[in-house]
Length: 280
Image (cartoon, rainbow, N blue to C red; front, side):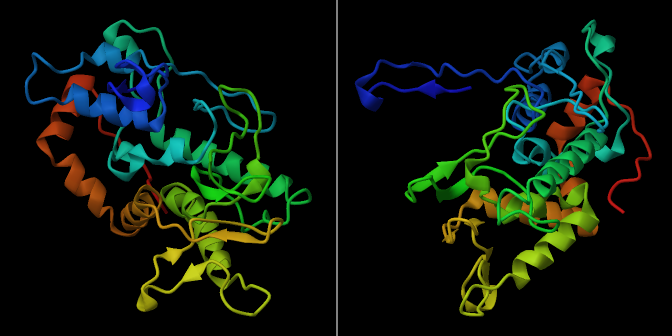
């Protein structure tokens, strides 16, 4: 996953223990770019991309999809901010001698986002923050059980960890907002609900008007804790802006897929064009 240099925590330089070997969004984006290297001698071989772990979910009453490690929405929408998976048919690992499931990654993320929302709505009776139009877990700044500022990463089944860690059910508005590429109706309803949510003083609870210097939404909120995190984090705000533009005009998809790196990766991975419906 990365390299730890000498001097950090007085430990020797070494690779980080964690590995990127799962077909999740960050991994697929990195391996896609590596497959599209301008120098073919240094490019990652296509079979390396296809060997990323693909394990299907079997959650009751839901269509199967390839799971990520923790089930965060971030792990289903991030690479879609650039890669226009909706243009292509299911990829085929078998073309490179890899025995693994062929996957339509746009449909995969659509299924994952809908089940993620369903699970949040089903838990609304346990947590005040959650409701039909208040859903979406993704890494964010929030508060731990003791009320201290903390970096939160919720785990929500189905996932490879096979566990739920609700982290007090803190909702990150950018999660549902970034899923707009797959769930436009549900995501728009959530964004409107977040904008209309009021505090006890009658003022917007998490909406920060850009006209007054704000960045639209607070990074996270929790109604049980009565806390809002006003940190502005680029990797949270940024993907939501890209996702909204893709749902609106497909602009980022068009620009990225025209780049030489993307064209080379598509060719080397042998993706086949497909008239996918894309966002409604």
